[in-house]
Length: 488
Image (cartoon, rainbow, N blue to C red; front, side, top):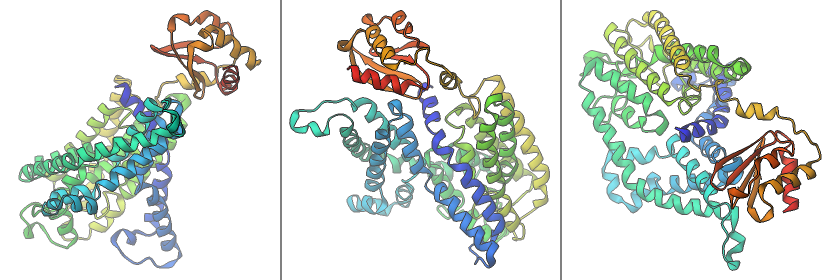
């Protein structure tokens, strides 16, 4: 759980880039809705809309790469950028070794399996981005202080981290070369199994679609239900102007349930997050989730909202996915039918309403109201009842430490007192710092005198590990760290 919480916090930096993308895309699609259907933009406003859509899409389309850097830096000790560089090296290594072109060269038999081909076409996904970030940060934390023989001394310490990450990534790629297509193919088999289950099957599909978003494996199911992988092709047939009479299933049943959830459910959940945010963090929550909700309503882009809480509160994300399944079953049973060629936002709803397969599109109003109320109620209850750490409800430790004021502004004197209390030079193996804490790696905890360290005017002393000591100093920690390094 601590690992997931740390991962969730590290994703906040890249996720913070997404709301502006959502706003740009929402405004852009409103100005130039024809671009979603492949039409030609005419006039200044439509051209401006296309410009804004492409600007927003630049980050949305490369979200996995944002996660590479965000996780690589965020999960590294002291948020060191070396972890980000190592994560990028890992990403480039994995996505190159597992690209469709290279895989079919070294394993020609893959080309004979459509599911495997699709799997490697989708290898540059958020899951691989997060995995690369974990590899990069993990290698940094483990090998940042390694000392090599003199003839390799140039690569000692932080310089060896990216090299180690590259080696680890080669091993991981070799494993994924065989595992990834198997997992992808298994999900396609699951899709085939539930395709004949009617409304319940559509609900199971919607649930799994949302649940698999973090891994990128939802593409496997999408190819079963939306495209002609096993003879379904709900999306293609809907936009081709066909009706249920032309196919063997109820056309649109695998898309319709997403509309009330994305257009109204997410805004309801966002409101619950804003209202339950801590009073001193409501503006942060509004900035993150309100713009994401607008983006979801207009054009159906949900990632800025989903990645904002899925790792902070994974249980809530499971509930969120289940609500999609429930509403999909309901929409199939009541006869609401709409389709999308981009995603289930208001723009696609407006366009699909004129197609032959569309039915009872007016029902988006009662269904939307129900989705808003249910998502709001469920999210608010779960957040408050289980004290879930959604945006705006994170721990205040760091904020409190930023307010700490060092009692003595003689940084050299403070550093000297800490050095003495820590057991002297001989007991310290490394010195670093984050925003508010001095982070020390030591040899012997028995030599540490906490009372002596606190007498230097610091706020507190923490011992997180057998060979670790952290001294809470506040925002002036850098000056103390510099003086301590001079003494060493």
